[in-house]
Image 1 (cartoon, one colour):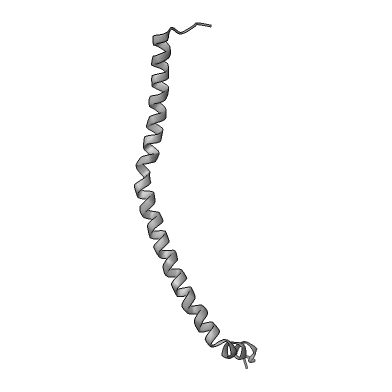
Image 2 (cartoon, one colour):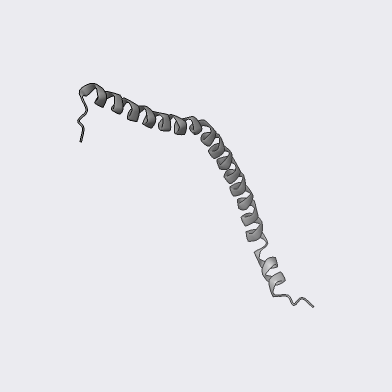
Length: 75
C-alpha cells in the first residue's frame, strides 16, 4: 500500500470537504422554498381548524335535532 505525503493528504481531504460542502449547500438552498411551503401548510391548517370549530359549535347547538334525524326511519 502506498503512503501519501502531507501535500497529497491535504489535496484528498480538500476534495472530500469540497464534495461535502457542495451537498450541504444544495440542501441549504432548498430551505427558503421549504419554509414557504410550511408557511402555506400552517395557514391551511389554521383555516381548517377555524372551520372545524364552527362545525363543532353548530353540531353542539343542534345536537338534539341531529339525534332525532339519525333515529328517524327513512320511509
